Length: 289
Image 1 (cartoon, rainbow, N blue to C red):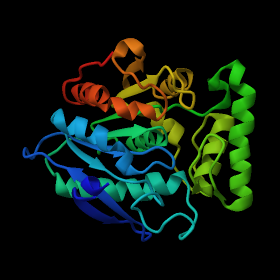
Image 2 (tube, one colour; image 1 turned 90 degrees about the horizontal axis):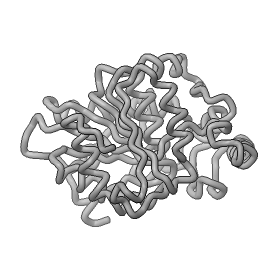
Image 3 (cartoon, rainbow, N blue to C red; image 1 turned 135 degrees about the horizontal axis):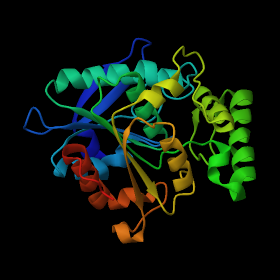
């Protein structure tokens, strides 16, 4: 943690008063490609330090940032107003991206998201195709209940809708059942609605994100892991059908990929494999698969 907090940082404040600490691993070349890492639900940016180092070692400048109300972001969860997907995509991302544009004016910007972070990356890129050079995701799939496969339909329905119900009643998600960490109620309600319908309809947004995804024509790398039960290949493949115009590359990581840890979170231990392979795709268009 001390090494992480010693990194160069940018302080970003949104129009609604939320503040973010964007940690940086810059490169000496001003036009070196830049990648922004976006975390999963309830995960802190510091978790991705091994991936940041691996991408940096492969020639990229790297930025990491907590999601709203997580980690170094302020106000902390339950100390500020509730929020959902709309705030993450339409308020937070534009402010963070603008700060990175100011700091790295000559660099093409890529976004690499894990799980929820990957959803945010794709939805933001759909609305701002001119701001992003490409998107990579890992463990990011739809949470549409039917995408989990018949054997898990009942489990997916009751667990995800239970999270939505608790979030409506309590106003926030305290953790447990699939998502161990606490999360904003609005995020979990948007998430549970998406699970029922497979469509993205963030509360309060006027954008048609489903149409924006359909028209997204950027390079997109979708990474799935064969031991990932939260974002299995079937869900990642279903999400791929929602971005038909994208220049898609799918990388399903199995034991033969040289990655020993292949569940939803432990893959970070193999950043030394995943990072350089993703960087080569970002910078050279070289498929990891």
